[in-house]
Image (cartoon, rainbow, N blue to C red; front, top):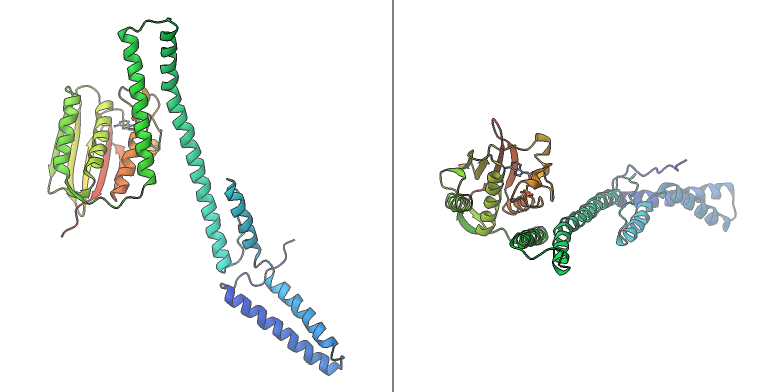
Amino acid sequence: MRRPRPLDKVGSIKAKWSIVIVAAVGVTAVVSQVGYYLGWPVWIRPIISAALALIAVQFLAHGMTMPLRQMARGAREMATGDYKRRVTVTSADEVGQLAESFNRMAAELAEVDRAQKEFVANASHELRTPVAALRSHLENLVDHVSAPDPETLATMLAQAEHLSKLVVQLLDLSRLESTVEDRPGELVAVGVLLKQVVDEAELLHPASLISLTTSGPLGVLADESRLHQLFTNIIGNALRFAPMGSEVSVQAEGRDHDVVVMVRDQGPGIAPQDQARVFERFWQADGSALTGGGGAGLGLAICKRIVERHGGTIRITSNKPEGACVTVTLPSRPNP
Ligand code: ADP
């Protein structure tokens, strides 16, 4: 059975120690007085007082330092990569608050550790596939099983390009996640930037049908190359998933203190239950890896980091009657 902790409800260590000291002094004084009236020998009174004061302190202070010992053990275990230990929080004082923070930190570290392991596993898996394919083609060439004809070389080149795109995306994502840069401060006209991205997309996809509508002054403080990368990615996805001949619409407008950009397509869209997951690293809808030009599910994860770095938000919803609508909201340039 758990021993009672009478001071658990007291909200400060200072108050707890004051109570403990007052109790010890009180017990000593009472025992001395009682001993005096009962005629106990002088030498025995302090011994009994000390013993009873000690019992009182033990009773009152029971469990006060236990969370600290548990935290010390937990911290040692964390240093070896074990994040399982949690501290039992029973008191309302600073030690209790510290224990709660420790438990939260341990849970967050465990989650970061899990995500990191999953990321490494996914990255290795994604890298292994094109490397294995490239290697088997090269082995065939070396062993003269196949000839270096243009078709084989083109396949190998495609695999090398896929590999190189993956490595670039992984490096980019890790840079965006690990470095803490100052908020970018270049004034970017979103309307002009979108026109440029749309023109480039039309050059790359001559059969595509992209409409661009912008309204109002659309200035944001941003890193222009990152915004270019963001919109190229989103418009590229829309073009990839939109059926041939259908229109991809890009619309930008100023709303309150924000610039809102919406990219709509008439492709298969994303099921509502998956709409938050598309921004996770390596997430891809079933079968979408087969859609030409796709990557490994890192594009939207990179987009999310870019938008967050600019203090904005990105979300994907369903377009009516069909397709996907990606909405990017960025804080507009503050008034001088
Ligand atoms: P990938 O480079 O593999 O396409 P992304 O992060 O850009 O990676 O996209 C992740 C997944 O989100 C895609 O594989 C696809 O399943 C889905 N997706 C992204 N954009 C669209 C869109 N416009 N329409 C339908 N699905 C989309």
